[in-house]
Every structure is written in structure tokens, then in C-alpha cells.
Image (cartoon, rainbow, N blue to C red; front, side):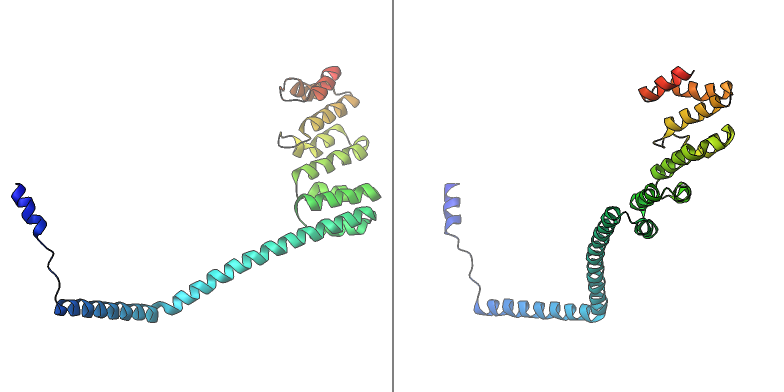
Length: 216
């Protein structure tokens, strides 16, 4: 066994001849030429598509960047215009912001325009076409405060029907308002229906539940 190991140690890796080295070099050169030719064929066939794809990606990325910057600039301009309108108590400017922007910013501008000139028509518009449920419901509550005495109880209940959902921030306030309206016209049965709904609701705010219990 030892003799075999010793013999293996003495075995040397055969050295390539000059001809073999030349063949290897020729093989590498041919392989590179083949690869280059295939690459050129591929580029020739698909080059236009690759370039077009790269341009599309570049355009999309650039468009997104421009869009983000434009969106931020628009938001900043709206905020500055809003602050200026409030500072100058400029009702027309606030109405303009409400017409030309979206979301809560538009609703807030319209509501502030109403607080400046007390034009109930602005509340009507906000209650009907407001962009957010919070401001639509707020407008309806203000309209009832202003016109509720002129309306019968059924009309008040119908007008506040969109608030009869826990998604509305004025759900409990609207329910109590309807109950109070029915009490004011002597319809205790209808009023108790709304009062009981508040009293039995574990999520009802303590203050509103206390008011409902006192009216019950």
C-alpha cells in the first residue's frame, strides 16, 4: 500500500504540447466568434424591441417622478391658497378652492365659506355633493339646526336618514336630534324608539346616552 502511494506521488501531470495549446487557443477564438455572431444576430433581430422597451421604462420612470413633483407642488399651492383665503376672509376664493380641489380639502373650504357668509345654500350643496361623508353629515346637522323648526318630525327623520349608520361620525347625535323632534310635537312613541336605540347601544357616548335616558 505504501509503495503504491509512493509511486502515485511520483506520477506527474502530463504537460500539453505546443500543438495542444494552439488547438485550445483556436477553440477559444472560434467559440468567441460564434458567441459574438449569435449576440449580433440576437441584437439585429431584437435590438429595436430592446431599445423601445428601455425607452418605455425610462419614460414611465420619468413620468412618475414628474407626476409626484407636480402633485406635491399642487398640494402646496392649494394649502397656500387656502391659508390666504382664510386670512383674508375671502369667501369667493374658498368657493373656488372647493370647486377646483378634491376630498376633505374641498369640503373644508366650502364649509368655511359658509361660516363666513352664513349662506345656507352652501350647506345644501355640501350636504348633497360633499366629497366626504364627514362633511356631508356635518352639513346636514347644521341645516337641521337652522331649518328644523320649520320641518315636521317625519321630514327631519328623512333628511337625517343618511346619518343612520355607525359609519357616520354623527350617528348618535342625529338619533338624539330625531328623538327630540318627535318629543317636541308630542309623538312620544316615535321618540322612544330612537331613545331606546341609543340607551341599549353599548357603544353610545356616555353624554348622549345620559341625555337619552333623561328624555325617556
